Amino acid sequence: MTSDKQSHSPLVTRHSSLPMSLHQFALDYSQLPSSEQSQFAQATRRLLADGIIWREEEQDRPIYSFLVRRRELVADYLAVAGWELRHEERIGAFHVVHREGAHRRRFNREQTIWLLLLRLLYAEKRERLEVSLTRYPVVEVAEVARRYAEFFPGQQVRKRSSLTDALRSFQTLKLVRAAGGGTIRAGQSEQLIELLPTLEMIVPAQSINALGERLGQYDRTRSENEGDASDEA
Image 1 (cartoon, rainbow, N blue to C red):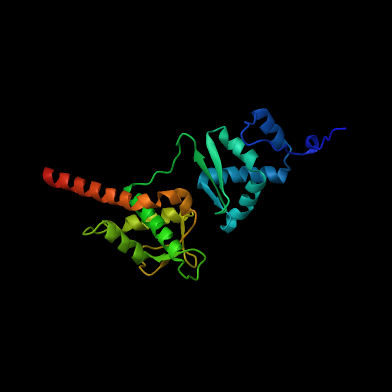
Image 2 (cartoon, rainbow, N blue to C red; image 1 turned 60 degrees about the horizontal axis):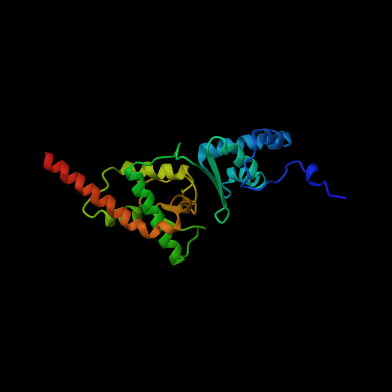
């Protein structure tokens, strides 16, 4: 006698490499309890709106737990629209990436520079194993500005608002947070910024060695552009 346990399972586990038909998806979804159907809708909305679900964010924990249980079902639903669901288990985060690069959040030049600086600082502080009252490495706002000046000597941050805007955006994306809670304010030079491991998803570890060179390229490109503008004046 053969076992028929699989046919009695509410959701049949399938191999991740096999595509799920829309009919099979509808069948599996209909077998979810109504409470989980509601969680499914909330999880997909938040993934597409925020991009990252991190289990250390209190409001993300129920969604993260649901995604751990129903990862394949959610992944198949998102795949129809070209999204890939990724699970960074070590960090404890899910995030979505569009296979064709559509809907990618685009940073301007200044935001990209700030992001690379913060990622570099995160890597440096993790390597030093600095003692901190917070779980993750921290850096003062003043130190971030100081490192900017090191990479771009003789150039002042043209707009204080560029750092303010960048930090606000990165905090929304769950890449940094104010140590102790609250909002990060670039005007408070002694305020501590907690650098979160989700930065590793945006700029992977294998890219660290290239960060200094990339920042240098920004410096050279900016200098050339300013030189061209001076020649035209």
